[in-house]
Amino acid sequence: MSELSVVIAPDSFKGSLSAAEVAAALAEGWLEVRPSDRVRLLPQADGGEGTLDAIEAARPDSRRHWLDGATGPDGRAVRGCWLELDDSTAVVELAQVSGLPLMAEPDALAATTTGVGELVAAALDHGCRTVLVGLGGSASTDGGAGALAALGLRLLDPDERPIGAGGAALMSLASVRGEARRPAELTLLTDVTAPLLGPAGAAAVFGPQKGATPDQIVRLEAGLARLAGLLGGRTDLPGMGAAGGIGYGLVQALGGRIEAGAPYISRLSGLDEAVADADVVLSGEGRFDPTSLTGKVVGHTLGLAAAAGARRGVVAGQVATQLDDVWTQALVDLAGSTEAAMAEPRRWLVEAGRRAAAALGG
Image 1 (tube, rainbow, N blue to C red):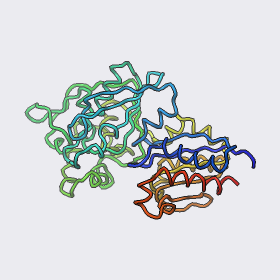
Image 2: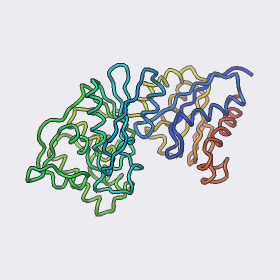
Image 3: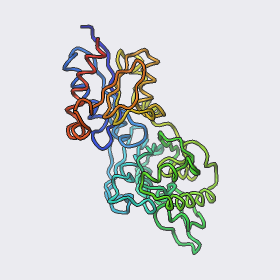
């Protein structure tokens, strides 16, 4: 049995296991079948849930900082966290302080991004000059208003009082005063190409996922349009609608730039170099479907593997698409049902790793 170089680079299985846990389980199964192979684990993310974990796993120089009492998306206190790298760079993950799972119940009109701004401010207070913000999984459609207010921008109503929290409050926005604190360099990581406004924008496309009714979507759209009318700039650029429009707010008010999250984290983690020398590349996510190929971790990883001439495999909770020359395995098929797969995801990932080794290791 010849020794193979194997790279295991999955996304997280959202609501189940982190990318690092998925990679470890797949590797365990693979090595049971092919113990002499050189297996490298490089958990990935695309700016959403798991971004902090993926970068931390790839950067031994990183250090976590905790912020007790950060403002959660529904105003309740949450424990926030940001990651410091040794080059004065901070990494903030929106989903960790402003994510939809943190809501006691969906509130599309009032959910806020205040906690994101508080984490960025904490990193600036610590002396960081470069900030990466992973966008994804947001509970809010406030255009980043909460984050900007936490960074010192004054968003005022006609009576020059601060507006309330959430996207609906933007309808009372009359003026924007002052300047927000800003890092020397701000990069926003996302897998979303939506503009801020319109039928493909933040409110119309992502509002329903956050519990917004059709009437509420109209209100949220009007609020984002009012914010855009005061902050200016182009609202039609790809990514401006990311995470409820916070992509637009942070670009326009802080001078940030939007980048595709999967390629950025791939480069940062060393995945590009690892895949170039790999015989086999195995990726994975909760559901593998056509959207996986539109800027997400699995699609990006498969593209790197194809360019390198490596054998390719995908393990997912569910598999809803097939590609030529890509081996796939659905956990629901191994477990017999979605419920069984969700109940013991690690068990079935280990088994999927065994099957991947048998199928791709020959």
